[in-house]
Image 1: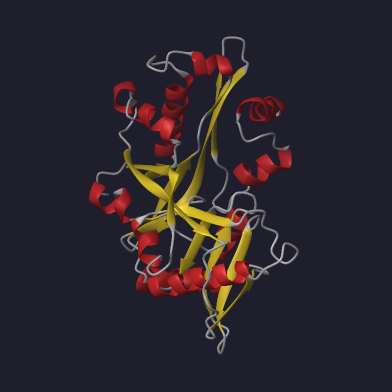
Image 2: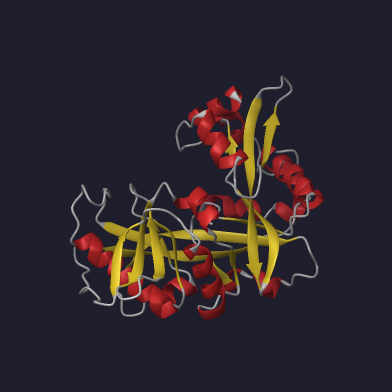
Length: 312
């Protein structure tokens, strides 16, 4: 474990993590332990790591076992190795991970690679790996300095207290009314594990107190890591309500360090941003997916059919 933690600290680019964080993120997920693959050199020193995180994929009304592949972590020497080498640590780790995934019955693998890694993904078929279908999405930005919306008297928005069974019902309603064709399944337990560390706003009906939707924001970057509502129109109202809430906020009530929200401009996000003023950042997100089952057509899981968020 110590070697893995040192790999994170020195080479991940995200900083050090604790053993407890590693266990929480990768060994105690709602769907069991992740598939953690490490690459070692001839002296048994760890030179790389990749993690496949289990999830449940909602796909055309059915639930399928899925995995999210994380970005590989490599020591500098491994990064300098010829990436076109069949035995490059990246390809070796992916091949081993995909073999285990198949044995354990995982049918869909997806990832959010950095733009630089997408060129590596294009090499996969040549090196004994499946072809990932990749799409790119712009980054939208909502200024909290200039964007303002009047409060909707029918909606009350505040910071989340805890995830309850209401969120299970919200997910069920969204699959029927949004509608959702392909997406990572949300549930109270999964959301608690996945986004509880972020700033989560929930919107409710003022009269009935029913949950309308939520928006989860990274406190440091302002990235919208997840959001959902029963319908596209509801999500539009929830976003406006969150912006209104943040516009009038003070740092003590809403501990967010930035004055701009950003997010993935997917087709579903764009439909929810109707009549909301946003700009495009000089950045793009990448998303790739693959199915090991011939019974799952590419069309049914092509990226344009996904409801996706950065934290999926």
